[in-house]
Amino acid sequence: MARESPRRSRLGVRPWVTLVATSVVAGALVLTAVGLWMLVRSSLYGGLHEAAAQDAGAASAAVDRGGRLGELDDDRLTQVIGTDGSVTASSPGAPSDPVGRPGSVPDTVEVGSVDYVIAVDDVDGGGYVIAGRPTTSADATLQLVAVGLAVGVPLLVVLVGVVTWVGVGRALSPVERMRRQVDGVDASSLGDRVDDPGSDDEVGRLARTMNRMLDRLEIAQASQRRFVSDASHELKSPLASLRQTAELAKDHPDLLGPDELADAVLDEGARLDRLVQGLLLLAKADEAALLLNPRDVDVDDLLLEEAARQRRAGLHVDTTGVFASRVRGDAELLQQVVRNLVDNAARHSRGRLRLAVRPGTPREGFVLLNVGDDGAGIPPEDRTRIFERFVRLDDDRSRASGGSGLGLAIAAEIVHSHGGAIHVEQDPELGGALMVVELPAIV
Image (cartoon, rainbow, N blue to C red; front, side):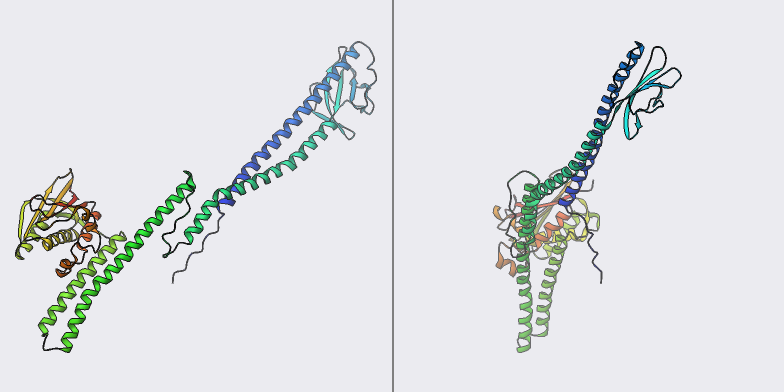
């Protein structure tokens, strides 16, 4: 026995959208946080460098004038380098060696445990001045910014995740409600419908689509029940006749001879066979499993053959409108269409039939086939209904003549499977019903 393949586990729409949204927002926030931190650092360190450059310029100007540097701030780094490269003056705590030289000044230097942003300015008489500003305050600010970003970014990501989860949940709640409603629909509650929010968004369109689907299912169920009921009723008649005949032959063998018994069994058996074959063909058509064996078919030959058969039965058949016409289709199925239409016309005629086929009408590329009779005709309000299954406009006469109510339904299914169309009109010459079939012609 074939094993059912396990379902693959996958995230639902709600967690998937939440995951994607939070991932995108988290990535964007991390990149923004890094960029912001680098921008703040560049701004702070740039300010320190400008301040160090101003200090170096002031110290160089003082040395050029031959004056003293004045009282040096313990918080800043200052070195005066002589022409021999030695430190001639410095701020308290400054190293005895120069921390930089013109043309190769690093961004920062570490003196003791403090980092300094330094700048260099030349002295007119030779030598140069190095001035530095400590990065302690800037580093504290950067650390505060980093802590704020490290706390704020995860909180924002969590907030986005929660908002997305709640928002998607609210957006999908009508869909989940529709799912529960549809899941509760069974054969006894096909009349139920999902709630339509009345909006023109995706949820509203989904609700209306589901309701239309339920409409089709309800119609199909009603049609199936009617079909099964009618089929059961139709099968009862020949079976009951066979049983009655057998009981009569058994209980009163003198009233029903072997030949009469055989004839009755053969007639009812043929009736059963036609009914079952018709039901099988319609079942295949319903499942789109009606297989065609296409080849070139001369429709005029099919009509002339049926005309000859009806003439042997004593009917007057007019075939003056039959012209050579060829279509591409299944010969056996098309023969069944012609026979069903002609048998239906003969069943309701008063003795005259009119068969016609002509290529190229009513529109180019189609073969037009007509089967008319001189019967009572079909009222306009019933001209669509007669192609439904087990529909008889004259039940008593149809049953008496062996009609099952499937002939026209079978003909319509076969014609549609060939890409054609069928409808009924009033015959302009004989006054009865006129069956009109359009079939694609061979181009």
